[in-house]
Image 1 (spheres, one colour):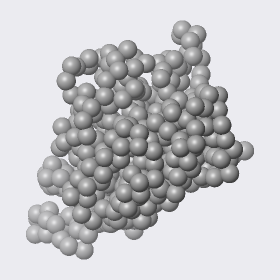
Image 2 (cartoon, one colour):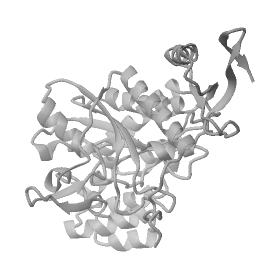
Image 3 (cartoon, helix red, strand yellow):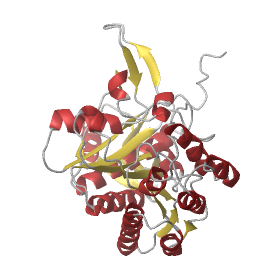
Length: 386
């Protein structure tokens, strides 16, 4: 095999794409800072038990593992930064009040999330620790929408679900713990027959409620139908109330954003503890953003406190927006004339991009669009329009 061939679902970012990724990354971090989020940079790898502490089996399967040559202990290359940020909140910051944290860095997956996905996403995320109220959920949602807007995404749709609904139905279903896996699989696949088989021994009203979930997707009318068709369990009512409150506030904050619901969506069912959401856009084949409430994320680190957040892959986000025009630049000749060097230095100090044309390469075109030139006129170096 040729030495330049990369592994499957691993790719280089070439100049224009890399510039776009970096510009979007800066916009996302700047938006998070505008909301008061502090940047943290957890390590790319750490002890495996810490990296997977409290996570679900899916994260374990997505994590590359290796042996530390210094200690002999197992290490993991992070597949998700959230457990690391939870560890930082629990043990390094140890604040009593609210902590707003954000991050942006590469993660590595053993398998791609979809046929078009990279196994090396550039993960950006933001999280709030220490507030259990819906105000934190709403802030995370509005920040997620504002970051997409800053990146140039148009036509966003927020799709809501709530882990408490399925948890409440299963808690009163009478099913044994070893039977729940089949229920989760059937709901995730939206397989009505498999769900009927898995709930054959469940309490009738709860089995009917689980079957109804697969029909509860669509617009705001879904919540009204859910109140009428699902069992009158307090936890389910609370979840529906929270979904209605958040959806209403999201639509007020961003009138152009569409809102939908899928009450049988079980992605991350063992991870999320309340409202969860996905944000879709017209040019993206899958969700650009996933997030929600995961109050138990810090429990494995000895500090179980409220948490809500979201994450996205910057590389995927870049592919869903219109590429920017080539960056405007000034073309300058190469030379050792002190006046020329001073003129170039002055332009760069003012924020201009100045591309010095090396001898013999005057006709080459690269990433930049040289729309101006630095030329010698009447003994002075001046800018002219090309």
